[in-house]
Image (tube, rainbow, N blue to C red; front, side, top):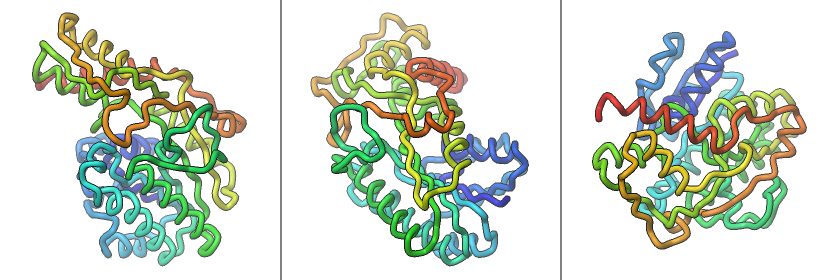
Length: 313
């Protein structure tokens, strides 16, 4: 099977590529390297990498040449703070990348799409969020662009016969992070080992998920036919606060006396959802269960990030 992964040089995409290659599949990773890194793909010599923007005509030509059986669409602006500061970012890099991917798939005859969605589509909502929760009222441009993308997936499923599996990610962590609290905290404490500035008051509490647990969930989800659009929440057990993450990073770097400076707001920036909880019974009913809890996933990611950054400290 030939598979295309958009955002294939990113943290999740490169890990996914390695998994598919390990099962004997052929993978073409497409990435514009705005967040992804070439070095993430270094462990995969059989992988084909193409450096381009999926919104360019060259992407449609690539799919026409490859005729893939399945596309994993991970390309997006996953930096919510950046999208808030630059409003066109999520329109162009999160929604239009999805529209371009769908149209390129239609043209080449590819009929299977796995889509990386997000908890941000729910906005601020109480209780354990299930996939059928509504109304969906995102408070970030990133969440809005992902929700619009899901709407396009639904339309293409019904009008063009493109079956889609939608996975609504929580905060996913693991080796080779490109952004997020763990990555940022480690970088900041490398620069100044006496203090760590934290956006928000540290009370933000969310479920975190190990990247390999996420990929296990995707494997389980796509083992069942899409109907024609199947949607799954995925998250680890429990949740972890930003305060706990800051303290883990401080301990892992061996600077217990570093001052952690918190903000005064209950969130890191406008559009940040400070708390949410997932109902994951749908994916669990198919036999999936995370191997690591939220806090265990965070601890492992902190250790990996500190180890990765240590040579430049």
